[in-house]
Length: 437
Image (cartoon, rainbow, N blue to C red; front, side):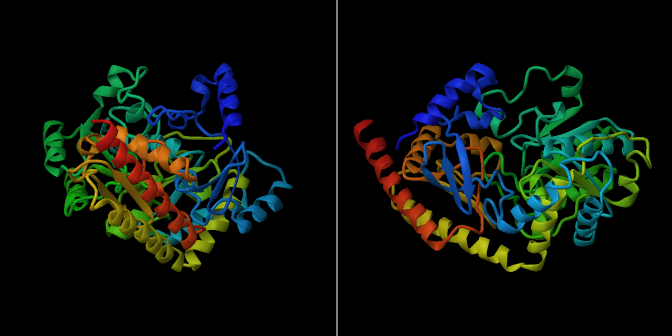
């Protein structure tokens, strides 16, 4: 596979961009090699600058539910961009998108548009602190909520991949106000609350993490968090930047039957455009300026291009619930296919899946939190990643990332993916248990 243009572009990018990339996971540090520079995408396929085609299992980290360059979204953007790319003033579109979300999600009375998932989670934390008058938050090891200072205490995804779970630049004061818990450990959270009685403003969590691989909540864990937050007057924040409108139109809340106090969303509500939002009950959300004292603002918030893209996608998903069933069936086929390939092999593995999110971990132990995810054999993952890549399958370049499916994937694409996996696993088996010894 010829990737000379990507190599040249990466060399050039390193002259002008820190690390040659604008987001760390793209650098391929975890898997080695040179990142591919993508020129275009359509449906389930990515095309790099050298003209190579790949079946895509990243979907721009989640939002491309109907696939890349989905025609209704593209057409809506083309029509709207004629009117200008930004106004810095209110538009009807932001009202329509806000109404759609509020009328669809039972515990969201008000929603504020922002420009990214990171901005949404940062704003949600500030709102929780302002509303409760308390300063401390609880977050979970391996849950990634963007690059806000409060969240870079043992974060998942890129922070772990690069070996910097506690980022320089985060002040000791911020670190002191961030209490770290383990995902799926309710007793540990209870102990933190007891030790910091009356000081905790919020618990923020990915209800289904996607930044240490796809991790599922154990029975009673999230229910217990909800009860604990109710009892202690703590705001429960669900970070649904990845899961919102992906696992179902109601996201993880609907799938799991648990309601948070504040919910954050990301690029899915803009069909992949730079956008985010946070929403919740009226009494909490009305604490934001201009109705309340907690200040948050943004010139590009409610950007009309992002709003029309998100409105077009979400209107389709709401009226076509069969999309979620189709996604689930396609992801199940991949899960079953991978298990069939691996169960008779000496390679240790765990597969976690819910809906259209799935991850493969090369470990013999169940993966239920950050520590068990970190126990995976990273060399096996590197081998698997590059084996799949050279066979035209583009996976997340980190063992700490969930795969995301789009409904543009065909049965033929899935067959090709599993065929590539079969060849790759055979290659790994031969190398790992043959020439390495």
